[in-house]
Length: 345
Image (cartoon, rainbow, N blue to C red):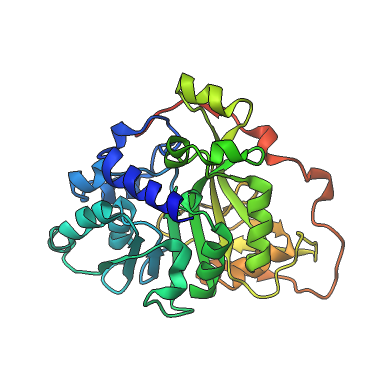
């Protein structure tokens, strides 16, 4: 484990100095950011932006006043800082001194830009969150952008994250996943590990680990296939496919291992600034304003137990179980993925 950690620190501290130094497009966001994210990004210092190595969009909606933990110390911290406002807070964790140095250098710059100071950074390994000065059940939201795949003990990261979240809190993050388990010889390739490929979890292993630590029903928000765009590395990985996936995991009581049908429905009432007419919850649910939508019991509980509660009207209870919510449409989501060869934005 120490060898991998040292390799990652060297790769992100010395080998890479800016986004353009990456050898693949795995650690590159493949889709355009929403308008409110782009507006916030325009206030982030250029040097912080230059050291961006993310693979997705990791900032959900309705952040005002939230206390957020970022498993990283990059530009997303300063984007989220603007969205939580002066009543919220951002704590970034990073083990790479060079990344932390840049993040800390511009704390005062961004405080002046925003008109308030609500960001702090801690040096630490995300596999040892329980050893840092972080209080259990103290965060509303945990975000991460292409960082967890660099950890060797991913179960520990998720377990500690679950403990740090408040009840009703959420872990919302993007990472790289594989179509099958990565062979040991590829796991030992330092370049592939640094490029977020050989540390990628097989997606089904990830979902099982999530359920094991308490996140009973992982939800995919966005999924895109990654094209490595490096002939030499493509030969090494062979027929393994890689995906950039954004997941949202809720710390919600009483979630079931499958999506069950209780005849329930919800209606989106609006009120989320970023989603005035429709709210995208995950790849299965987009709620249009003032339209009743049938939902499974887990979705009902997630919405009712989270910060989104006041934005919905809820219909039904758990007294009448009807079986699986939609058994005929339990399809492999990866079969629907369209390959994207887009580069960094």
